[in-house]
Length: 399
Image (cartoon, rainbow, N blue to C red):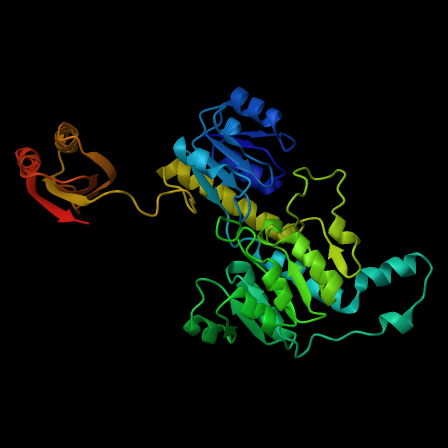
């Protein structure tokens, strides 16, 4: 298995891939055309990336079978193009949850005690205990969570340890799950904004969440409340947030920005960080040694499972539903040619196979094939399949 790694990667992960007999090419600086050239030159089966963008040109440059995002999100990968080309896209969800939650709480505490401003003034030779000795404190303040996946869930015990009640919104959150966590479920993001003294965002970026938190959300926040985003910059309307900072006294801690650089270093100066009360960090939420080790271990697991079984853990671009209308269930003796004969008959009938599996009974004498088909299954097709001497039974199930 040939593996190209186009971002920084833990040395233990590199060693583990090589120990699994993978041919590893490590090019942590390859981006844009350089990445296209690397894929063309090394013809990898697997591409592993962190923040590096993987557009269609990269996917088309070589015989890629799998792209692994060594992190939770995958918005930097052209998933639609990968799906058209039959390339798996996988990620490593949940492995950086604690690291991101730790940064989110660091930003919350920093906003409350204005730690960055304290440091800046002291470095400039200014002593201002009179000003910085004023803080609201977090105990008893309500934390609002937007999104309750792995990271959002990791925020809950930390909030409770700070003595902060939690109110949360997530499309998947039920009253029962909220009761298990000891939190209150809200019906909408706006309801969270209205109820919380601190709002922390933990959403994946997709078509439903892009721009989800806009002017109505920020207008609903309490004057002087704190807002923290460690998810993706594109889930918020940054201009609306800037207006809330100016007009409502909102303090914001931002680890992510909509137009942030793809490289690890360079020139970048988002206007919002110039506003008083806004603290910015450099998209470092997942960047702890612990998180990177866990992510590398999971990326290696994905590659090795794929190499050994052909299956892909955590795949994100398989169809959730297909146009299949019927399932053809074929109970048969486990002999050569049975499925080939059935597929020939299906092809002659002009039907498209959407999904199929063949499971073998203990002892290896018999098996059952389930073939999902798009289109009506006529009796003559059933008769042709059943005519094979090793077929025991044929059943048609309407989906």
